Length: 525
Image 1 (cartoon, rainbow, N blue to C red):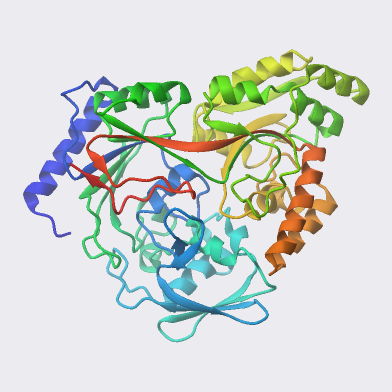
Image 2 (cartoon, rainbow, N blue to C red):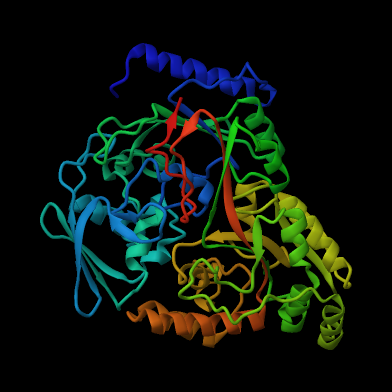
């Protein structure tokens, strides 16, 4: 790093002081140093290996340490070049050939080239790869269409797919497609997630468990050095504590501000930033066993929950009521004809009676805080009350975010009847393909934690991802939404408008519709 020794010493002295003050920070005491951005995250990251994680909380760090072959153009979900300068697609849509950027090195000094790209995808997809055991790779679904990755010369890489796959470029821009240093994986093995090395604008410095992840400026970054000297990501799981830290000056930026707290940041000392994006907040229902194995009872839950009250009262108008599994941000694929389930407790009671289901005891998994979870404890409590009003007896079990994922992602069978969940997606294919197909049940490697299954939905999703005609894809997705809404494998709750707050010392920050936190151009005075 091209830092002066004094600057580095000042940074880490300040870092230690900030962490030591913690929740005891007060105005005039916890002033963060210029050039160092302190971000209040919602949880400790699970790992810093982009192929091994699923949470936006982790992605907010990873997108600043790594690059992909392509990336989303600022302010959009349109793909533009990154580590690849250009690409060609075969006429049949099954072969993608990328020309790679010359002169790029990983943070550990090893070269970025076609063999490095091949290593990344082979590690994820090939069980016989010597470093496949550094996984698991839960979102390798994104690239399941790849049959081979070839290094065609030093700076050209070719992907061959088993069929046309419309979301391929978009998925390459997603964090799962970020390129890691093969040399670092070979050196650290299963510990690579604690010792990351990419090509991004910031270089990993240290991870102090439950305290901070620290990254430093990459002065040699291929796309221009960041303005910031360093970023400190602090996990502050309690939202009220994050708010207190933000007000006190202990952090410079806070993500996922509780709606009830937004009014505290009105004024010249802070800037509140909002951005709509492809987000859906829902309740996974266990369709395999228990009361929700009956479709009528699942529909009853959708009628029982007063989603308008949740959006207006709990979320203070920072979201819209969801109508189905596809966020309206995907305008071309969204079924505008769908209306959200109305709040109708009497209809819910009638459906329960019609179902003949008598055991209405439910176990409900709630998280203390997590990516896009929208004030989850308050939401969970309000939902519990709505369900109780129509005859359900709901017991809430609350978990820390990473523990929560460890309970929900492997499936609810034998454990719970419902669980909160939120997804921020990059393509209308992503969420339903990974969480609604029969082949996406947890024991098959997917995220269909409620075990929903409908062969017609499976057929529609499989057809949509191989169609190269966007109008045809849209037709298939809209039909899928109609069926899924009727089957009610989830309670469809809300589409969130993401938010963040920054101090008046922070400039050039914007939220992205991708929900990623991109900090290269941010300035901290």
